[in-house]
Image (tube, rainbow, N blue to C red; front, side, top):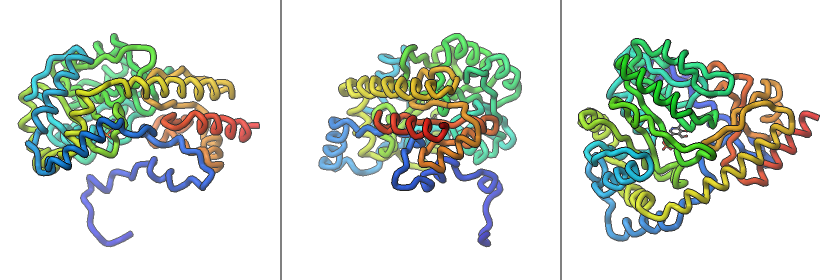
Amino acid sequence: MNEHRYAGRVRSVEMSGIRKLFEAGGPDAINLGIGQPDFDTPDHIKMAAIAAIREGRTGYTPNAGIPELREAICEKFARENGLAYRPEQILVTAGGSEALHLVMEALVDPGDRVLFTDPGFVSYAALAAFAGGKPEGVLLDAALHIDVERAKEQMDGARLFILNTPGNPTGAVESEESIRALVEYAADRGVTVVSDEVYEHFIYEKEHVSAARFGEDVITVNAASKTYAMTGWRVGYLAAPEDYIPEFLKVHQYAQACATSISQYAALAAYTGDQEPVARMRNEYRARRDLLYDGLSGLGFDFPRPEGAFYMFVPMGRSLIEKAVENGIIIVPGSAFGSRAPEYARFSYATSRENLSRAVGRLEALMG
Ligand SMILES: Cc1ncc(COP(=O)(O)O)c(C=O)c1O
């Protein structure tokens, strides 16, 4: 222990269990732990960034983001999600992470309850706690979907409900009926919905449905990070009813000033340019999902085929999870994503088919 003093809010939060794991792997490790695309950013996006640097677009931008990008994001909402937004409703952020952070800072008072699924994305609980709120998990059903009735029971008196479909760590895609029911019920109870849609393009059978289609009080969080293989560029955004934006902007302008100028020009090229690379990545993820799912099912693991993101949440038991990690199959124990799923592990298939086959083969050998 060192002698510095830390705020209780921060002390109460643990380091992400995922980072620790990356140090565990030896030279022969197969990494299925990582939550980012293994693809490179498409070339036309990189070229736009290079042009922005050459043209000297390297200063602060307007706090809310460059007007062209906010406009392009509105066009994206109209084209892909059937939603009509105006640029005044869009705030460009340093990744989806910053959007989640500033929403919590702006909306959560000490003691406010923040609901999200357990298991769920690691940042939700931490960000809620940083804002002084009380993180609260909503259990999933046996098929790893939101149990709408159970979620409704917890909704009374809550401040936020964070919906994440396609979901991390489960890869589950919620049905339109569930999304609608949750959003309508939340509106009825005065609960603001934050819809985290960062995996919207990685969905293999169904169509993505945006929660904002079903209610007024919905804040959509999204990012270029996963869609365009741009995790390191740090550019995302939120879309919200216009009256939210000035308060959000306060947090954003004092904490961040603006998202990186160069990345914003890159994102502009991403949203306005050729969408074929996204389709190509989706097709490859689908093939990998099938390869990994068939491999794991063949070993006797029994779980529904996930319909989205690039994750699989596999019930395999604690001792086998440990054994797998010790033997260089880097997967993330379910306990990293909440309190209730220690028997599961998250497999990310954002890695080559060869790695996936090797991982299944090594697991089979361990089980034999
Ligand atoms: C569900 C979910 N939301 C948000 C993020 C944050 O994305 P970004 O890299 O844009 O901050 C992630 C990243 O892993 C995620 O899995």
